[in-house]
Amino acid sequence: MTIHLTDGHTELSFQYMQAEGNSETLLQFLLRRFRYLDESEWQQSIRQQRLWVDNRLGHPSQRLRNHQRVTYLRPDFLEPEVDEHFEVVYEDDLLIAFNKSGNLPTSPSGKYFKHTLVNLAKQRLGRETLLTLHRLDRETSGVVAFAKHKAAAQKMAEHFRNWRVHKTYQAILSKPLTNAVTVDMPIGPALDSTIRIKQAVTPQGKPSQTHFQPLDEIRDSQLVEVRPLTGRTHQIRVHAAYLGSPILGDKLYGLPDEGFLRWLEEGEACLPMLGCVVCRQLLHASEIRFPHPDTGEKIVICADNTNLLRDFSEGPEV
Image (cartoon, rainbow, N blue to C red; front, side):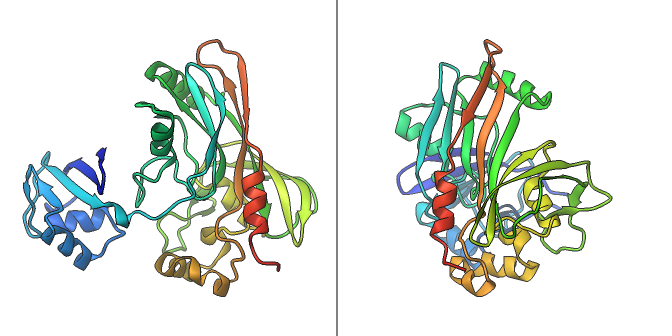
């Protein structure tokens, strides 16, 4: 995918590769690739001349061939607003790291293209290149590091592969833990859920270990330090839910499936009715440690938990 940002719209270009089975029409491809618009909305976008195939106006029923170029002129008003607050917490000639808010995607995906940390940072700092080294969920605040040059990015990728990068998080759990605990339970797809992205503790999963250390009780909740010892999808959130104390504000693992799907459909307005007392999952990346990609010196980058505590305090008293 190629992304070109302009005033008024975001130009997204794809080289089409045929999905499994029969070839797709343009409309079928759009419904599969961009699920945030329904059929009538895509029909309208095509009528508004926002879809092009090999530099010609697209038609809903035209059959796509491998390697054709599909371009979507996506209007900016479709992109949700975000909390654009972030600050530089580390910088040298090769790397830069930010402490981001709890409503800001790291890099383009889904509905978000312009309103992402990497794009906003490029604009604010006047940089043409920032290479993503790792990601945080949109609703996870805290430290995110980028490389300024390809060689540094390649060395950092090697560090990640060889487990030389270590992360520490803080979270606010919905129920207090009595003691420190290390959860050593395998994680894999939640086979009993209709939600495709949901993970669960399951015997068929991959080995996963997460250490939870209680810090302070806050109201009926608890601030904890979390050290993931492995790197599975949604690992901290899954293991917190397994302990019976989901991360406060976690819609995917703190609500029944029907509650999560309702939130996707209706947005934040329905959260109080679902018993969700904060608008985002209260998970914060507080520290990242790794050898410097040039000198090998141990680098420790920290992000204070101001965003985490602020977003907790703005929730209603319970």
